[in-house]
Length: 272
Image (tube, rainbow, N blue to C red; front, side, top):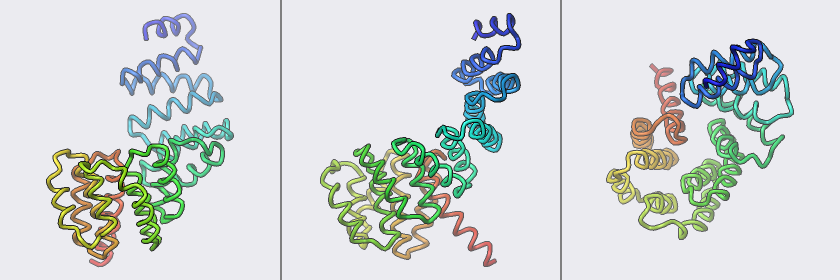
């Protein structure tokens, strides 16, 4: 950082010295100072794509999501053929629960870069929330095929099929993977439950006994999601609430649990 400060003192109108110092400060998690430096860089060279991307990322860390969207939109205007502006703006829209906006940007990312795998799971989640379960399945499955020990992705793919009333397809999908899951993992128990969802006593006991808080929260979401499909709404809501309480906001299962709970709260408020 000191060398960038020295460079700024020598040439105070050189934008890259500010952007470099800003990124150095961001790495130290001095985010407000980083944002200030990157703002100077943007002011000195507003047509440079990466200044907007970098400031937008810092603003994401600061949870200034509308400001981040402004930066990513500026970056897209400068270079609409580069995928990263769309990917970052989609992530910011996700954080603001603007799921349709996020999905539109994720689609553009994959139009430009179909092989950009970091977007596969996010577009699947946005598709799921938007009700496009076919697209959700496609990208949950693609993400799982790339990381075939991510059993959570397989469960989400299965849920996407179940939401299309494709229970037999979901069963075939899970039967292909169930024997590859270590039997001492709770994911194995949940997959077995998804294959025979009328018998939840055992899996519920396993979830309640799970000592890993984060894993327990994830499994409560999957339990609630299946209960919801069975029409057992109160049990589903209780499970979603457990997931929401146990998980940090960055978890997919926390986001989906909160989304379902908000839907129920909206219905209840409308009826009161």
